[in-house]
Image (cartoon, rainbow, N blue to C red; front, top):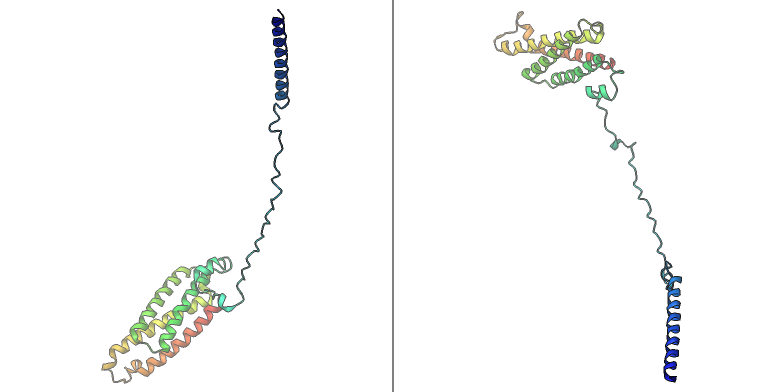
Length: 214
């Protein structure tokens, strides 16, 4: 009977201890719920040294000297496209542009006379010049520009150049058969040379008038 009572007492004490331990564990877990890790973390910044950012200096490129003659290109004033677009057409009329196209033609004919080139080359240059003048005449004949000195000078020069080209052609054709008498004097080489000199002077004057019209 005494052993039975002792058994019940020990069993009751065991239940009390078990219940106390369960309550303590549950209370411990609930106190940390939602708080994450509650231990001590190591100091990660103790041996860390921040790296300095190096600033890169801007690269300086030396600019070209645009006042140098080697950096400047000549202005193509004899190019109609440049005259129309760069210099603007409101400052330079189409008539002046057309005049500018005759300047290199006349300079070329002048050089042919100066260098005493053969009849075929001379006549070819004059033929092209005359055709250009014919087109120029038809374009401005009924316009105020037809009264300009430059217009009239081109018309006169075209007739003169045409007559000299014909003279040189006939002289080259008939020279072998002429004795240069009264009727053949016109084809005399000296006379042909003299007429070419007159034409060269007139070309020079016309070029000057055309340039002054700009």
